[in-house]
Length: 301
Image 1 (cartoon, rainbow, N blue to C red):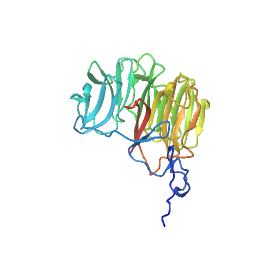
Image 2: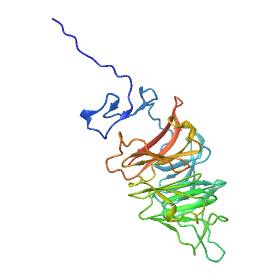
Image 3: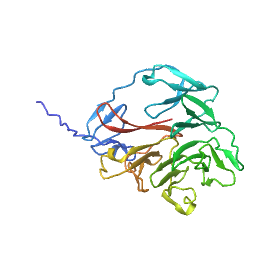
Image 4: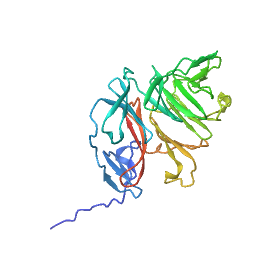
């Protein structure tokens, strides 16, 4: 006598759930998933994989779609379109994590030890100022260009440049001070997002004089994972079709977070997914994949 074996049909999945006990997961949750994409319908497909296009000891790569910079060995290099070759721009910059930001026709770079810029395919360290009370911008952990200034974060301090000379700052002006080392710094239309190890803030204003401590809005009693943030145009947000301007995504120990131009904050995965395992840093980017889907990709170390 044969017996029928019951089976269950799964219509789609939301993604990994590492918050709930694996024995209590819903039918739409996954305990594990490796190298797959999940589309808006819940369909799971295998990623295309990777192809080696340029061999070498490359790290800390940045691109604006036209210029591509990175570190090869201990040298700052420019990588040709199509990743066919490279040109050395500056030797001996070291192996520390390099940060970049575009400011008009320059790309500034810093790795906590040096600070400089690339212009017309040439790399330069910041020159010594000639005016009284002016000093070069310091090397830092993060560098951004916003509101007509360079902003450099070093430990718990945030330094804004002079608006008339991005290379310099007034030594008489104190930096903005935070309660711990800055682990995330992203600027939007109406202010900036900043995080330390144990707090995340939105600071409204576009001028350093406006960005006083009273203007800091505490968003979360936890910080951000360093270098795990990226910016996306609001039009790409599927569940927020009315979002205008820029949206910032970042990773934290408590989940993937999102913030808008106006400082509106939400932890998108607080009930389902946390970045666990003692992650100390990472990298993030926004892309349109081969199927036309908008994706924020985060990798961790």
